[in-house]
Image 1 (tube, one colour):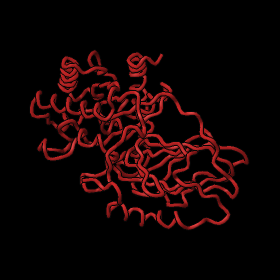
Image 2: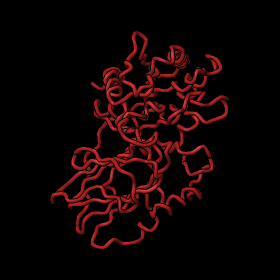
Image 3: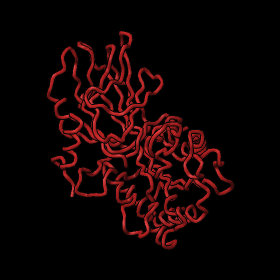
Image 4: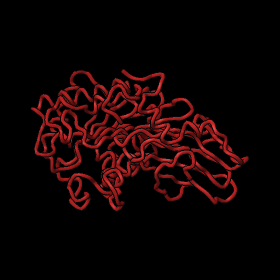
Length: 373
C-alpha cells in the first residue's frame, strides 16, 4: 500500500527533525519568503508535492529559478546523508549539506538579476529530501523562468549511472564520493541539449543484486521503476506511484546488469535473466507509452560477455514479438570502452574522465536513434 493523502510516520519525523514544519509557518523578518509551489520555480526529474513542500528521493534531480537581490536561502531538509550542489549565475558548483530553512545558497551578490541551479547530487538510496521554498532579500522577488528545453532524457541504472566514486577526491563514506550530476547521463544530456531524470541505485541488478544470494529475496529495478522514489524497501513507506506526465521524457536509456554478474555469481540461467530484462523493459514502457527505450550494454568489461549477449537476446525477442522503438547499443564487443585508469581502482566504477568517455561514445548513437541532428 502507498500513502496517498498523508505522510508516513517516518516521513513526518523527517519534517520534524529538519524543522521544516516550523519554517513554513514562521515569517522571516526583513525577507521575502517564496513557497515551493511558486510558478517561477522549475523542477526537473522526479519530485512530488506534499503540503507546502516538495519531496524527492532520486539523484541528479534539480531545480532552477531567476531572482533579484543580493542573497538567497533555501529550506532544505531530509536525509543528512545527501549532498547538494548549487551554481549561481552559471558559475562553479559549491557542494554542501542541507541545513533546514537557513541553508545559504548565495550571499554578498551584486545588485541585479541572478540565476540559481540547485542539484541533489546523491543517489536515491541515501533517502528522501525536502524543499520548502526560498528566502530572498526584503523586496526581492523571483523572475520569470527561462524557456524550457525541448528535449528530455531519463537514465536507469546502478552505481555506475549514479556516479559512484566519480567524486573520489572527497573524504568520507561511500555517498560522499558521488556526484550523480556529473555521471555519464547528465553529461550526455548536456551534450545533446536535453534536460534529464536519473533513476540509479547502487548494488541493484536486473534479477540479482550485488550481495544477494537468493534471487527472489530483494527488490530489483523493475520493482522500483514505477514508484516516485527508490528510497525504501518497505512498501508502506511514503512513496507514491510515479505519474510520467509530471516530467515526460523523450526516451529512456537503460544500462544495468553489472551487479547480476558481480562477486563471482551469475543469475540462475540465461532464460531467467532474459525474462527479467524483458520485464524491466516492459515496465519502463508501461510508464512511458510510445517512447523509445535505448538499452546500453554494461560498461565494465570485467564481468564478461554473457550479460551483454543475454540483454541483446531479450531486446531482439521483444522486437520480434512486436515491440517498437526498442534499441540495443553494444559497448565492449570489439574492445573495452574504458581502460583501467578510467576507473576508481576497481575496473568497475568510472571516474570523471571515464564518464566523459561514456557520454562521448553514446552521443552520436543516441542522436541518430532519436533524430536529434
